Each structure stands twice: as C-alpha cells, then as structure tokens.
View (cartoon, rainbow, N blue to C red):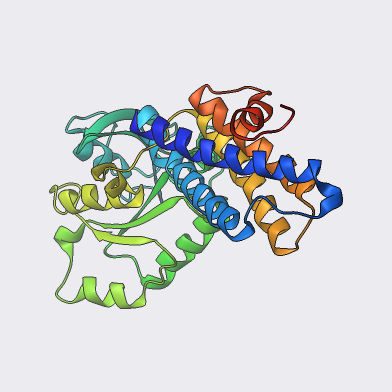
Length: 312
C-alpha cells in the first residue's frame, strides 16, 4: 500500500506539471511558461531516482520469488560433489576419487537464512575424449550462464598460477558482469602453515569476486561460505524497509518510466519546446498508471478543466 501511495503521489505531481505544459501550448503565441522549469527538473529527477531504485531491486526480488540458482564448477575431483552433499546435509551426489565421476548436472534446493538456493553440481572441467563426459561439460557451460552465483572449487594444493588461469577461463565463459563469483579453496584440512596466506597474496581477484577457504569433507568454513553467498546476491537489501519489486510487469513499466524521464531531463537541458517534453511526461504518467491502475487518456485534459479556468 505504501509503495502504491508513493507512486500515485509522484504521478499526480507529474500530472499537474503535464497540465501546465499543455496550457503553455494553448498560449504559444504569447510565449508564456506556466510550468517552472527548475521545479519540473527537480520532480523529474526525484521520480527517476525512485523508479531506478525500484528497478534495481528486481534482481533481488526475482531471487525471493524463484530461488537463487548456484552452479558449482571446477576441475575433476576438486570436491564439488562433496561440497554439495555438505551443504544439503545428505549424500545427494556420488563421491569417489575417480576423476569424471559426475557426468551430468545434479540439482537440489536448500533454504539458508530465509533464502532458497538451487545448487547445481556439474561435470568437472577438463580436456577429455569421453563422449558422455564431453556432453556433461557442455551442459556445465550452459548452467554457468543460467546461474546467479558461480562457485569455482579449487584445492589448497593447487598453485596460484593454475587457479588464476581457471579464473580467467571462467570469466570468459560468464557473460553477465553482475553474476556473483566465489572462489572456494577446498581441502584446507590438509593445508600447511602459511599456505592459505601465500595463496591469498598470489590469487588475482577482480571486482566483487570473493575468496573462501573450506574443507567440504570436514565441514570447515561452511558457515562463512553461507554468509558470503548472501552477500553475493545482495541479501542485505532484504533486511531493510525498502520496497522490493518481484513482478516482471512492474519492472518493465518502471524501465519505460525511467527511459521517458531521461528524455525529459535531456530536453530540459537543451531547452527543447514544451510539446516535446509533454510527450515523454505523458508516457511516464501512463506507465506509472500501469502499476497503480490509474490509466486514463483524459486525465490531463480533465485536470486542466478542474484546476484552471479554461473553456468556461
């Protein structure tokens, strides 16, 4: 209700300005301005900031609605299936010392801190002549680009150069720069003194990439991993009082509003005529109305006759 009321208020303010601009068109020969341009610019900026913020929340809103797809990738025998079993707290995936044991994707869901995650264990990434394993690796690539978060599993005994190479390869596969990437160094129950710190210094992370040390077999570091999973999807937004958009129709309408208002701001900066501003403001009002259910093609005209002595 609060969200709808705020949108309705801003829409009403836009409607008032649109009416003033329409009035200017009726008095075009007299070169008058009823709509104060600075006030209009401030209002347009305010509405655009709100709609952009709401649009940005759709990512986390979609997560709340559908669950977070998390794909587990890495070289064969690095502990991907062991990690999946540890997170699910059941033996969902077959674990063995034979590389290539997992040849197809294995999926299951778990709720962590109120968020549903869909974990996907995949075939190990390596060069192979096995036809079935090749098909599994191809499916791994598909799952990587479908996921919201990618967990890359490596081992504490791996050298930093090999890990950095796998990171670079994975970045080339990932097409979405906003996708969360967590590098997990597994089998840390076997680490030597100073080994973790040495790897930390030499591993090259980029942007928002996260490094986590665990032992999936001994269930060490899993709580920290769960915490970082929440950070990678922006879970902190769920703990605020902000409105979260989960409806694709609302998201698309907000996107149209933002585009229309961006054109209005550009027009104001370039001092374009009021009739062109009115077109984009009308569009913004229409799409805001799609959210609140206040769609009417006669609203601006009705507002003019209601509030101004025109045609009476």
